Length: 465
Image 1 (cartoon, helix red, strand yellow):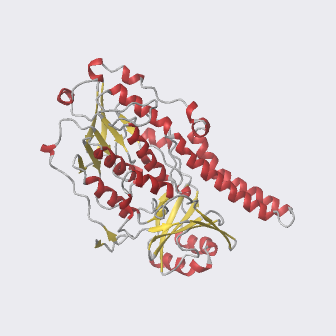
Image 2 (cartoon, one colour):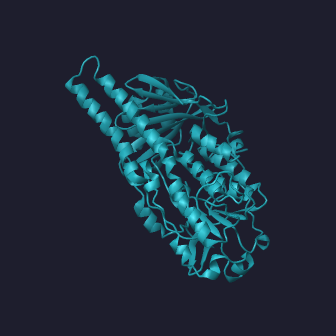
């Protein structure tokens, strides 16, 4: 570890080496992964571990420096264990998280994760995002059939019978231009982040959500002596004088135990900003290509479920594409390779539908959010209802609805609650490929054009900072 004083996180892990030995490249890659963040690293590692030839393209293999993606929920840690990557949260000063403390008007309610039946190591984990990503990359690079390469993927090459990637230029999206993707992204608010030092959270090893005016404030540990504070600022623009806004509007809402350290962080620390993004999970499917991770689906980070969904998607997709015989029979057949365009397309199309039960994450968050809201309403109506109490209760429910309803609506009512009835992408396009291309030996196909049997875009250009 080396120190870099110009970064927010002064602990920087070594960059993952870029393999520039092009002469050693196979004629045909089984899988090309564009973007080596959480989802890209996990999927690449799992597929290489299964023996597939994987090329990973990442525009910058240096440690990223972001202010979100720092709290992995217990469900995400379980997925990490199932992928065999749980060691990636060690040796980075990560902190166990056992639940949340909800604070409003100085009163606090502590909610623990339901951990009954799990081993002691199962808990949430919080950390510096960049350290975690570097550990994932380092682990993925240990697989002999995986090649990690720094480069920019400019565009997909679409021919009547081929899929390929051109390296150089801007970020790549396999199913339409970035302009099309960008139109689908919503920007509900900004996160303003600072790191607080020299203070202790009211409840150690817990995330803290302050139900403040005009919007929530989050606190959680990211190392043994650092606390991340994220302030949600609604709207499409930040206040012109951000430091003054934090001092006059936000600091009075900060718990007294943290207020002095918060004000000190504003004056002496880095103030980071990030526009929050929501991208509905609408499949953009074509044979030979797949969207995953932030390139496919983004939620407001206030709910803290993004990494859990990404890792769950990787585990599900790995199971659906596994080359070994399955122990349980279902609609999917094992894929010994990606050379059969129709079979691969069918499996990846099924992935878009089968991943929807993980939208239960949204349902769980919705239920928890409304329980909190209803609890607050109940408190407002005691010991007896008043007009002011009723009005504040309505405002509380409206605020909760404004967070969760747009997410469910964007995902699709049917897709979230009745995923088996949701229409899925049809593999008919793959069936229309020339018969000679649906199954060919790798050497022959590679001679016609250098392309992967399957390409995955795992990160969008907007997710890097």
